[in-house]
Image (cartoon, rainbow, N blue to C red; front, side, top):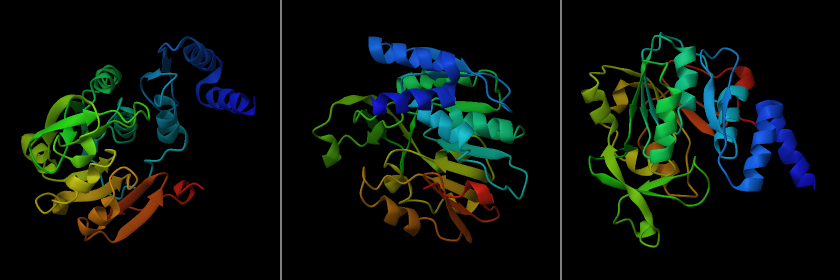
Length: 263
């Protein structure tokens, strides 16, 4: 009973009454219900799957504001790797309306909702692919942790042998994105790719000097060695802080005092 009350309270705080009723209906019927949520300071409503991990992701973006920090220069280019349904890209588009945003997402249903959510934001370019350390096909796997937790691995990865693939997508590198979109400088590189950061950050020489600020969520529990790969592959950033579930590294930016790591 206590868990149910907490869940209802949680949904009410994030989605209001209508969203809470839709979420309860979804849990009871096992159906997916959609809600268009308006957010103060965000130009257009955002579509969410109410009985899914879209809700905690939305809370991280727009209530806790996990990607809110002091940018010390005009932000012109952002790469959002692990874009999911577009919430971080939309947050950035409203914070930095002059920035071009490249949103990379591998999973088909997430990508479909991403396209719907960004249709009023011409500055956001969506790519269905998986960020990787080289250009090769990458398999998608569902560990059963929700729509924010799809894992991408090479088909020969020993951890993938006992899992069923949902299909493959192109693997794309940061360097390839930079070249394809004629980017000379990346102001923000956000990486939330469920363990594949270990491979991505194993080969940073070609693009790391072009990045001002990196925001990375590490998934050591999914792919051991992520943390070591992160620090080995990201030298040269004088500023580091924790915010939400992310590690920030920056050459010029700093945290807002009230947005440091939550307990």
